[in-house]
Length: 125
Image (spheres, rainbow, N blue to C red):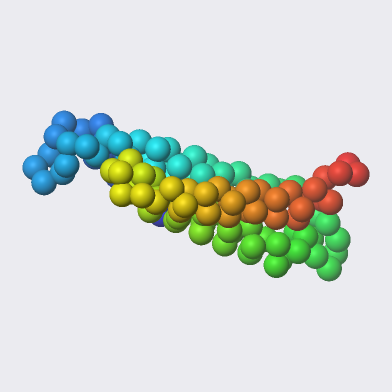
């Protein structure tokens, strides 16, 4: 929910007429807004719904590995945090390209952890 609220607030700042005290270059934050909305809100919503709604894995572990579930959550949000910090740095020419690489690797790890945890629940059905 926090990502949704941040994305909505950032979207208003990007699209609103210039406001006092807000730099005119704020429109370069469009990629940050997009990542907050798509990765921070939509992807986590999809992962969460899939986590709860897909068929049960077993009686002992109905939703697969709890460790992989938390790894997915942590990696995705760590990657999103690095991206939210790195995107503006790159846009404003302050370096930060390495943050985007780390962010992409963390988010890839989240996707792999999600698939590893979810695939056994759906492969035989």
